[in-house]
Image (cartoon, rainbow over all chains, first blue to last red; front, side, top):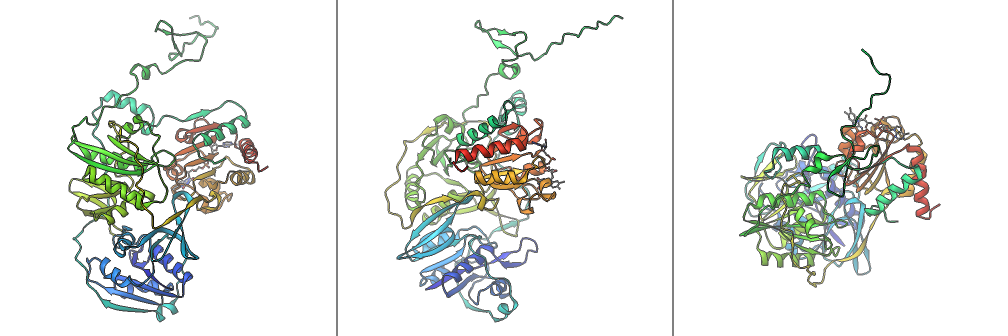
Amino acid sequence: MKIAVLIAPAVHPVSGRPCAGEADLAALALAQRLSSQVDVWYAGAADDAALADYLARGATHIHTLALAAGREVLSPLAEALQDYALVLCGARAGGGDGSGLLPYQLAEQLGRALLPDVLDLSKSDQQWQALQALPKGVRRTLAAKLPLVASVHARAASAVGWSYARLQQGKIQRKAATGAALPQVVLEPARRARALVAASKVSGHARMQGAIAGGEGKSAGIVVKQGDSVEKAQVVLDYLRQHQLVDF
Amino acid sequence: MDFSTQAIPRIDPRRPWVLGPSGLKRIVLGDDSGSRDAALLAHGPAHKPLRSSGPFSQRLLVVAHAERGQLDDAAREAIAAAAILAGKDGEVLALLYGMQDAAPEALAELAVDRALTVADPGYAPEQKLALLQQLLQQESPHTVLFADRSEDADLGRRLACRARLSVVTDVVEIAADGVRRRQPGAGFSLRERAQVLLLARGVAEAKLPFVGKGERLQTAALPAISEQVQDLGSAASPASQLALEEADLIVSAGNGVSNVPGFLALAEALGAAVGASRVAVDDGRFSRDKQVGATGKTVQASAYIALGISGAVQHLQGIKSCRHVIAVNLDAAAPMIKRADLSIIDDCQSFISAFEALVRRERNLV
Ligand SMILES: Cc1cc2nc3c(=O)[nH]c(=O)nc-3n(C[C@H](O)[C@H](O)[C@H](O)COP(=O)(O)OP(=O)(O)OC[C@H]3O[C@@H](n4cnc5c(N)ncnc54)[C@H](O)[C@@H]3O)c2cc1C
């Protein structure tokens, strides 16, 4: 089965240079585990050097839809990916907007179901099963039929190590494409963001009282001094049970 | 001068008192039960005013998923942002999943004016989208806000793509000239205010000086629409097998824990992930990847049990987003005790063995 993997260069957090994105690499590795026919696609304005990292990390051939900067990539991508029953992409790109919107837009455009934040994919008779990563270690199993779009969690699989030989052998094939112009964005240097704060009309005395009552309006916790260790252990267990923090 | 050798009778200026049957304050000599904080009580419980009593001409919608019947800080901030943006004639409408049991006072305290509470069906994006679109049509809010994390982030993105609404994700600041989002590797980017906003943490101060009306639309059921994707159920993997950042239950050891094997046995019995303070790591008692704090890992467990950790600021930084902190320490004045929701003043070693035995007994592990 042919699988399409979408990639995009990420911004290296230290050097600021383009590199391979974690989630995209995981998608590539997962696809290669599932099938031997993996097509790697990229749409955008990045040059070949920015994509080189992916060649070195296991992509043998990258199909590039070359667009001018500031163009939307959705429609050219959707057109190119029509015939793939399974499309994988990283849950979030580490560069560009990095908004995590593309998988949703793509699924909507192609009229397919989306499996978000996938850690693992497997085929069981007619269906595909996906393991979805939720916060705090919860894993959900989802099942759906092809055709599908899946956004892959960064921890799903690890790609092969960087290799110069693969970098030399890999090929990038460019094809010109067009997309609608996106609105211009204004970039600013990062600074401390200003939070919205409600204007408070309380008296100075009330504010003082609030400050004494403990930080962030949180009432002080319970302090247990009495009893021996066994009783105190029981107190802790009761607390954990009362707040449903343990399941026994 | 003649000093008496007798002890000077000292009078505690904050002697505890009780309210007598006649409503008068009475001090019972030698008794140390009763109320001490007279000054705080004299003003009565603080009453927050109503944000706005209406009539409303426009509204904002906040959508949030509760966990164990409670909203987390990210969702509270989203509601606070809506309440601050609403203005005098704006109403804060909320669609809350998994909060059917919340009292109207609790909703009012969140600054919600009107809430639709729905039982959380798990993974059901099509049904949730249908309900949301129905609500958009009925109420026509000008902005829909979500917290940009987990289920809310997913639903927000789905809504924006399905209903073709303008959307800005990872919003870090809402200002008069537009909204700012974090752009990977390029600082902030300034956008126009969109119909759907997905908010990063810290956009608004969750503590509000006012309450909302807290009315409740009747509890609605989700429309019966077939899902393309089936939910086969979810399971929490045991915390001991998870990365520290992901774990929901963590036991953490500090300098006060000398019996490391005993501590690890407790973690195993509880099924909790293991963390440590920097001192315990530097000593070589734990590996570096276990360190919690400014120079270690930032964790977001629901429950964090700190054993023999003093609670230095560098350590507290790492546990900022933990909901329940339980501290065990010999020193009742340690900063960790101030942070903790439950503090046990006890020796770690005896507590650990007692707690482990209790947990094993309760789980029938023995
Ligand atoms: C730049 C910088 C970065 C740092 N980053 C981190 C970081 O990321 N994470 C981190 O944790 N620290 C960090 N630290 C170190 C931090 O300042 C503290 O030194 C450290 O957290 C203290 O660890 P502790 O609480 O385990 O030890 P201690 O401060 O020694 O506290 C031990 C506590 O255990 C109690 N105790 C002792 N014996 C017993 C007993 N038998 N039973 C019960 N309680 C007992 C004591 O009362 C005390 O409160 C950093 C420091 C610096 C300068």
